[in-house]
Image (cartoon, rainbow, N blue to C red; front, side, top):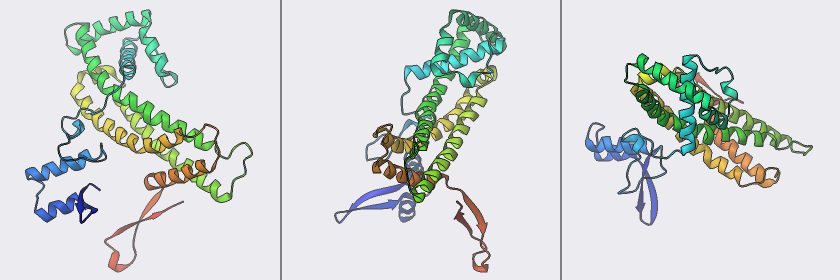
Length: 299
């Protein structure tokens, strides 16, 4: 919940922004109300905002406030170029899921593929009603810049999360004796992590499906931005939360099986349970509570 931190008699107090608005009679339509709404939205991307701080560009212009590496831009550009070649009929994408980022970039640099790309650019210019292949290449680079953020998050969030899950799944293997309680905790952690990573992977699949048809994507570039940026922001905010936990796992040895490992498993349990534990919505049968919906945790 977004809140205002204030010093009060030597102690720090947290006042929810909703309470601030109510206390000072700030309406949502007023300039102050709109500013508080922006601040609340901005706190998805940063831990705190102090007086004089600039708001993240995500809530101002829609652009990302963080940078991607040149390699991720290469990946995005290569992916779109190969999609263009496939559209022309000069490539196959049946095994696209097996192609690594390095293979993707190397394929786009192949002289034969580059010739196919140039042919596809010329053909696409006629389809899109723009003047020449360079104009199409410019559209590709505009879209690639947006997709580069998705590619960076695919590595920082999905791939890293999957690697952390594989590592946690190996805890207790190799004949190590662990108690039934710890084994149950380990089972629940791996199950809930799998649920979370499946949800995250679903976002990437939606993005891939939306941008999979290259000509419609280039023809409706602004529409693609409106689709990609909210997904980028959701993935980025999710990555910020997961990174705190994954950073802790990076601090221990790959084969370590100490008490510190079990403390991290307990910590991961708390993290995943807050987000991915199954719940069932049910209506109370008590007459006084018939208008209230409650939740119960299911194991």
